[in-house]
Length: 396
Length: 84
Image 1 (spheres, rainbow over the protein chains, first blue to last red):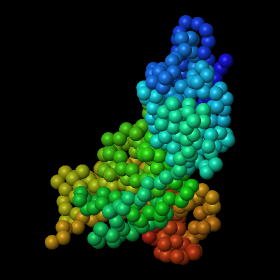
Image 2: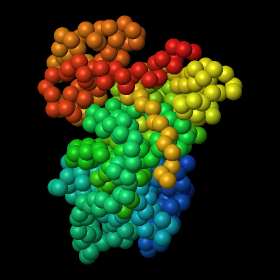
Image 3: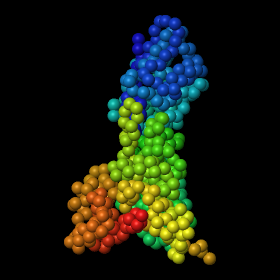
Image 4: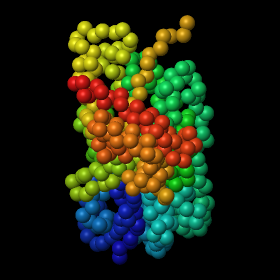
């Protein structure tokens, strides 16, 4: 007899359905997970075993096989613990065998039987809703899942025992409510900046039309200060934009306490960021900074200090609004429609634009051009607004 | 239009309807495209910024002034690259 549980695997920000099949058969005691599990998924064996013991159930002394179908898709992440455990519980009769029909399950298990939060619950809930299934997820992620739809059935449990009791009817769990973080009062406002009218005008234009902006100025002119205050003039997220931003944040594991954030994202990675950190992908295929900045602002301070290859990988997303990451077996596309705000000094020492300055190294045009050539032509071509931010003397 | 929320996202085909400059504007744009060696992408980008500038002014059509301002924003880094 094979117990089957639905779960998901994440491709980009979408959740693909994965079938977890659990079979308990006669034979020497063994517990095998097949279906290209990665290390975290294989370790589920230990967590599931301990969690079941902690919940008062014993692993049967028989040959247990768990298959994660489709078998040729690599499975990553720690959210397979709960579906495997529930499948096992259904196979040994601890919960009614058809209790899990029509549910998508995801969650990580602790050794004491508790269910820990995982990333990606929102896209999983949206996928489950599309298949007309309910969702079983960790309690901490319940409010996140509630955003998928007002009618979807959600069981957000803190432990395996709670789920067993829910199905027995002795402790029925109520549906979690969707929540949004209250807007923290930001103290960063564009009004704080004195002078710099032309820079403020450029920020207005960038904010109004979503155009990319480059600020060139001497050190201490106020470029970073201006950029940090850009979010104060951006329009609020519309409901569909909020959903997109939240799905990406969910897959990246950035949603805290299950509550969504209604503010536009503002990301400012350090210039030592790697390609995978910026564009996404890497070992665990997570969205990068540019996807986390979707519908928001990506601020790159000290633009020429970034690795040139990393900067050039921005060209496609700046044009199309999405980034395709190629992995060994398949390509994943993340949305990445962001507003780029970049800041740089005009030359190495930073003072080329100061009136009356004469450079000792080379003629000013040459020195400036050398430094600015670090930004490739095609990248510069995609930046529409380029302004000079003059330094101003400190207020006396 | 669905899915297009900002001027920066507007596809080139849409620009022909919403960002058509008047006769003076056309002339300015053509001259600038020659001097600044604007690429086709650059040309469309200038139109998008000019459309935003016209929107900020509440104007329905793009005027010479909007195009001039949009072009000036593009000019900064161009001269330096050519000097190198």
